[in-house]
View 1: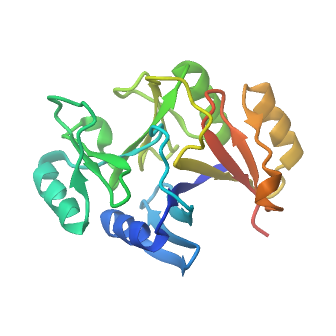
View 2: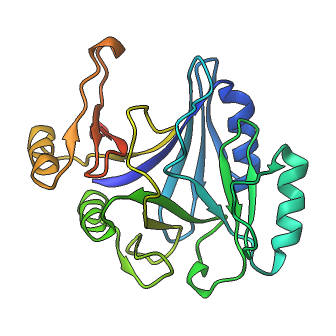
Length: 240
């Protein structure tokens, strides 16, 4: 298995997708009424697709996964660039911090980070902070799920692609327990040829995750799960 997608729920997938495509310098894959996809390729590292799927109304659940963007020595210029693309400043109670909090065109928070040595070779996305009820437990879960491995960083536990390139997946102590509403951003992992979907489902359960059944969504080729802290993710079938 490997981490393949970062998925955004969006009222206007085209508007939001084009914004993020410009932010990360992505390569457009899909642009249809119900969705938009752009690809971020990290040279010598992971390939991540940013996918935007249409939802009927803006999400209201507090954000449990967001993007930290590379700023560094060019933090001020990067903030100005994002504002020019359609972002806005956002106050989430951050007070005096060295990073800058912005909101994308649909209100999803993102941070433009100050210079940190741990962000060397990340590309435009420095980190993917994910709320966790138990960072040690969830780091082991996500490491098994994605093949990413531990790195020393600021968060209690951080994982990174084995190439040591691309963004960090940071397991951060959650400010509140996960509610019942679906996360507005989630991750997808892709099975590889030879992976047994039912065996993977059993292993997810053994590690504290759970399969989420949504018959109202109809028959889909992927399966929906939650990690041990309740964060949704999807497992996509192996490519033929």
